[in-house]
Length: 120
Length: 446
Image (cartoon, rainbow over all chains, first blue to last red; front, side, top):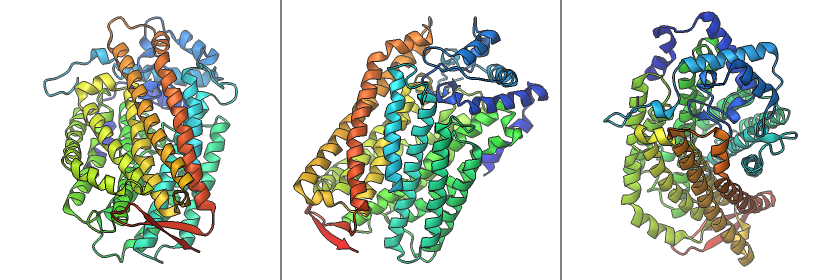
């Protein structure tokens, strides 16, 4: 239980890097992510589905502007169906992807292997 | 019965979903991968949960006759079956809202938890007067309690405090998911211990010190090894080190399997012709394969190459099909009875289906590992090709994956249909093994 609570209390102990408004928007964006079941095909930090690419850092990926991301979400592609997100949902989802991107890098090439086998 | 139907559905939805890998956009206008994946995952999860709890009730009927409240058990299953029907219907209508493994609207988690509380109360009512609990009763008890705890923890995200902090939220999500798997493993491994005691007609397996040592080690891993899911997540370093260190204790399971291998093979040969044992034997071999893979994947330096690839899926499939489903099928043969082995024709069909399932599963598992290796190479390559090109390059592996999965659906489906026919037929036939001979005595009960 102590171990569990040490994890639950982390947000209170850690200094925030995002504003409370952005936190709230991204939390709503996570609900949009869940509402449209994005995790079926996509991953965040390598966790999720395997049919589509990992989206942790898609927000800052070269050539992937917000307009491009929205176009793919709404229009779909060969594998992915298009989704009918409202303007508000699109905005929330973009904030969520922005916060995910700012949280760190999910690119395995950027990790270093330590002598004890741990990665950093 | 309901559990077996869920398995049939899980197999069907799984094969349909897998077709999206070779036919992009497969059934997108009707069902599509986005609906098929949660339909598959939830069906299989409910196969494990319904099957696991059903096995415990069947075992309690033997261990503590008359102490289970039938009314409470019926209410529990009625709530579950009603909830499952609504959940599957919601997926078909494109209504989600939950998270990985539990993609349904969180409202439906309430009846599932309520039914689990009924199950807990019923279990305690049945076992409280038992003296000297064998290891499997402890495993069931801890599995039931931890399921309840981690299932609730899995829904902490509904509270904004957690959802607003992305890294902590993701850490908790995979903490809960990892421990949930550990909790139903406790229930199923407990069932395997019970079956071994029953089949060999001894009380040695469920009461010896090694079994208790393995139970505590399993429990320790259930509580602390989940950190190996999130080595790449920028969460607290101590979480990763605890996950790493605790996961390495799984080498003890590995060494134990090697150490007792010869003895296990002798026992396997003795009971080979008895189907419940045959399925337990298969699960033992899959435990070995999956433990080997799990301990290697839990080393962060290796995990870096396998994380986010199909190697993880191979491990999940090897565990849910090779271990969990084999134990449950063993229990189904033991508890539902198996008239089919009484006839030469039935025995032959089951024998073929059993071996086709094992071979198809091995090919399926290898194909997923092959896909994982290719994706791992792609992830680590300096000049990364576009994702779609990498996926196109995996087509031959996808074909093997889909076709071996389809064969497995047919062979496992045959086994399930034979079990359903046995279960629905009255009077129920219970096969009692005669140790050492491999021959069954078939008794008939009203």
